[in-house]
Length: 150
Image 1 (tube, helix red, strand yellow):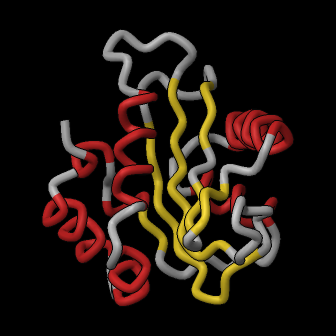
Image 2: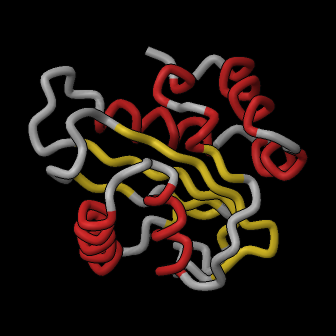
């Protein structure tokens, strides 16, 4: 299993417009192509998860994630906010890179935790922040995932 298998170029946004945690979460959800009702439900679930503790893991990276009935299979999205926002990350630094993970409550393939783990592993790559900052399009993001082979 490689991370690249779960991402699609249309779920990659390199210029997030939001300036708050809520704005960013809504933009990331928008990348999944859900209807408005499901988007609202997913937003509530992600907010509930963030209230338990920020998914900002440090190094400018956050991995908002939850399980929800609004999806029937694991879905992921990536967004970048060059200016960074306060996401209450563990290291207290602004977050620039967001990896959204949403999975149904019961998934046969059980990939939710492995994908979360792979993104966390990917996030530890020493050159990752610089490489993500240098991206100019979604295809380059996909190529980076492939190159890292995670």
